[in-house]
Image (cartoon, rainbow, N blue to C red; front, side, top):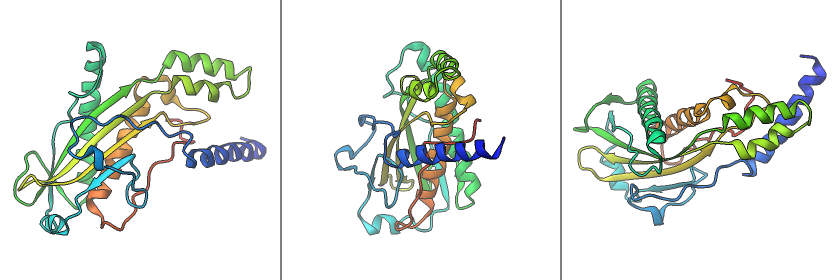
Length: 240
């Protein structure tokens, strides 16, 4: 790629990133489901978590009781609150399994916790729910890409109508007592990019969002309350 092209690409990405930081590319928060225990008390907390809404148990004693815990049990992902047709539900189950595997893998790689199958002594319990899954409009992206070869910016404009989205909710508990420690809820839509092969797969963008969530939730469970966990940028140069 010629230097002028690299500069042009960098300028475009910089502009998109600045717009993303302003919140233009953020997915609208999904409505809370009965999966959550404290939906009315959940708020955005950008100083700590990159999610739409969080609730943290305000009791210091609750957190002291799990201070020495070194295991985590991640339950199978709940899809009962997901609105879907029978065909969509089959795909949602695959995504739920993928989500479960990603969270288990992320916690296992962290080195702070041993991943176990059932909650017990010195064990945190993570409950997850997939509450929204809208696939990427692959056919629309093909058309938008073709139009972009003729009309500059057509692909970016078209992405507003072809984006998929995904939303999750999570609860972290004391695995010994069942005491609720934290709740998280977040929504994501397809990342913006100049070129992405994920645009041509129904749920590739959602799988990337799940990877980000697994990393972020693991960090929230493993770091002090004053540590800021950064969110993933909604703009990317990575085409895969």
